[in-house]
Length: 297
Image (cartoon, rainbow, N blue to C red; front, side, top):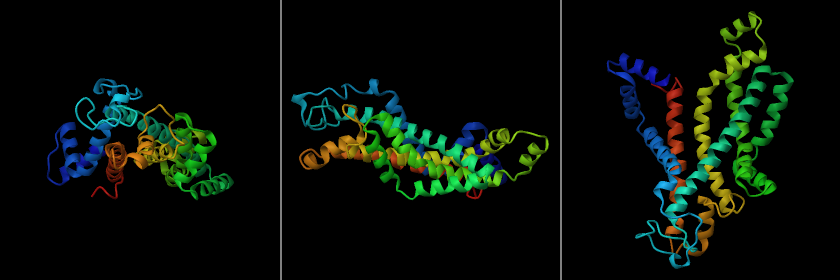
C-alpha cells in the first residue's frame, strides 16, 4: 500500500515509476537511512540463518591452546579466555538475540493489541480499569521491570522472553487504544452495526486490520529495545545462561578482566549489539515515515 502511494506521489511530481523495482528504487532514494537499517537487519537475519555454514568452530567448544588468541588466522575475530572462537559466538549469538527480540516483541504485541483493542472499543468502566493498570506498568522503566521479572522467573531463554515482553505491553496497548477510539466512530463501523453485526466481529474484522500500520512501526522500534534489554540482562547474569552464546554475557565475561589485555573480547560483542539496535531504529523511523500520511510529503 505504501509503495502504491509513493508511485502516485511520484507520478504527480512528474516522475516515472515502472513496476515494483522502480517503486523500490524510489523508496531507497527517498529513505536512504531506512534502507541502511533494513540492510543491517537483513544481514543479521541471514547471518543467524546460515550460521552453521559460515562458521568453522562450535561456539561452545573450549580449546585451552587457543585461549585469548588474537584476531587473524584460524580465529578470524580471535578467541576468548576459554579458547572459544569469537566469530562463531558472535554469529550464533545473533540467533539468541533475534529469537529473544522477535519472541518478546511478538508476545508483547499480541497481549498489548488484545488489551488495547478491548479497552478502546468497549470503553466504559473496562477502559478506565485497564488504563489505570497500564499506568502502573508504564510507570516503571523497561529495564527495571525486566530485571524484576527475570530475577523472579530465573535465567532461561523462555523466561527472558516473558520478562521482556511484559514491560512492552503498556506501550502497545496505548497505541492500539488510541487508534481504536478513532476507528470505532468511522462510518463503516456504524454501517456494520446497522446491519446487526456482532460487536466482537466488528472489532476483529473492521477495526483491528486498520491498526496494523502503526503496530508494524511500533514493533520494529521495540525490537531494538528488546535486543538491548536482553543484552543488559545477560550482562547482569539474569539473561541467557551458559553455554548459549549471548552478546550480553560475552561482554559480562570479558569487560572487567580482559578489556586491556584482549580488547577484541569487548569490541566485537559491543559492536554487534550496537549495529542490531542501530539498524532496527533506522528501519523503524523509515517505516513510520512511510505509513504516516502526515510525514510522506
